[in-house]
Length: 456
Image (tube, rainbow, N blue to C red; front, side):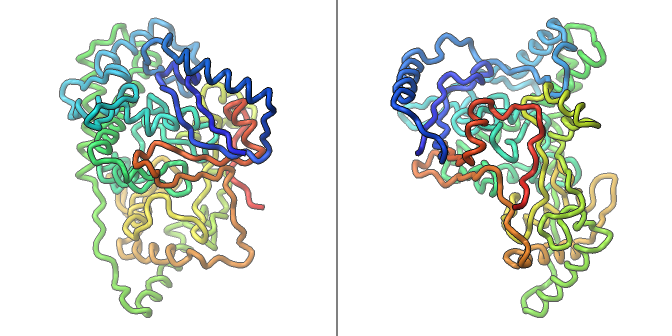
């Protein structure tokens, strides 16, 4: 059967989440008795009537990820909250700090509760389209996050995976816009290409706002908690030392854009075959070390079987016991990353050759995938022509898998079709029957590790 789940008063409400339409989840083993249906209907009616009107205005939750909450005194937490509130406002009423180039009109369109006017102008765009996965604060721990693999992005660290910039630079506006329009295949991130440009611009601005605010919060936590700075922290110091540098990093990214040279000619079958052959040698060579993670066949079965991105590596202890003890300091359990299987899977960061060039040259930030091109302070591992040859080789692997290369299933079958309403605000998640009851009852927040998908 198909169960439509509505959660008007989800526990995330304390963070400011509105009601959600999670779409549909198909549970093969789920059956509802008549009594259960009557109880569900009564509960939904009560929630619809009562709503969440008694809840206080939404606030940003203090970022205690990886910390023992007891190590932060109430005075310290309040001082950090006051400093951030004075500079950035609240989820309902955002502010733009002095000297930061953010468009307040766009922020107001993205922030706040979901609403609209007779002219078709929308408000609360982030909560309508993004917060169910990314959370109201952009912490990547929204109501649906616990059952997704990979987890939604936590914007607060200021790290974005798929960019066209070198080193640790922020993404360009076009990078974020491309992600919104194209989505990320193989994840729960759908395409929002049907949204008007003004709404896409508002969402991009709000993600940038959440990132700058999040980095400022991390800096304040270090000063106030780790370094025991005197309280209150002067606002002008926070602005000069933390806010403006975080904001400037977005402007500096334009100077670190990766501009690929024209690729070697592959107009004839012989030229393409020669390029693929060179890419084959590079893929298996010692310089690139591609096979360590992606395997000699490019099927993702390399020697590095236990890999984590930066968001999950912090949850990994030296022993299983230590990992379990760290679990209580994070909102989501530890989750491994799996190298791409080039023989079967789509490229998450874009389907064009230039997209793969950027992934190889600039790496995938926050993951074990390193850059092969030059970066500030480090030379290039591969020449531009070599990167193009590698692109051609990797693209040639698609659909040419060896007979023993079985499909690697995902623990969740994520379906995010283009919405028929044109609003892009409905996500359909089909969950395996053995996962669904656990996910619903416990939110997938158990202490044990969430492993990478295994082959069968």
